[in-house]
Length: 226
Image (tube, rainbow, N blue to C red; front, side, top):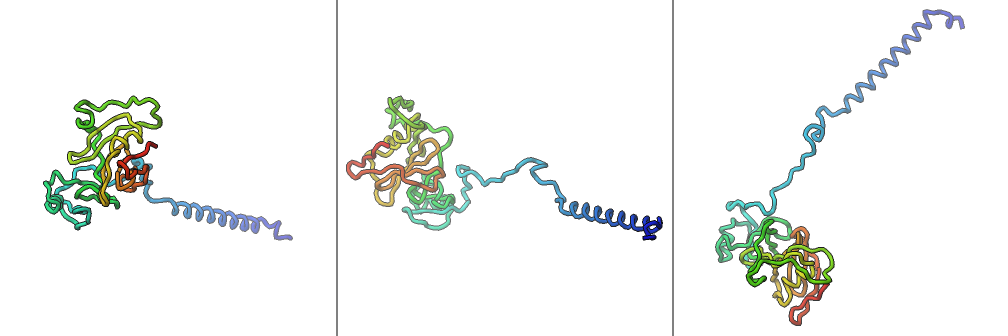
């Protein structure tokens, strides 16, 4: 054990241990530094950035090919003018909307083509109100949420009532009217698209995926309140 009393040996061992510890510390710092990203994350520079496609109701490019439907059948990719010609109508009279896959499409509105949602402001339908502006529903006993009720036709979207429950809107839109096989009539309640097809009324929150909300009887095309 005499070597423990030799200061030179003790200093040499201590120096070696110190060098080893420093080497390990430097290696650890280098490894951690190498794992750090070179560039700052985008959220720390300019905040969260979300890129979205053009809105469905944006103005369409007349030269943009659309999925064209003629008599409810897909006729290929055509411009709005060519699709209108194949449908035998003027360009402005052609329904433009989205198909069940969400792609922009043109043709006659039906089960294969849901018209685009209306603009924020929609004029009232004089035929539905006797020439008077649409009034807020004051029907006693009305339950549930209320919203604007709109009908879709050749002139586009027309408001037929505001402050209506979903059931009242469905009655105002579709009661007494039956659709033929393959046909469809459209309306809106709040932000929900309504569609009448044979024997039932359907609803959709995204204008593409429809689910049944009411059944329609064959006798008088009546729809039960719900």
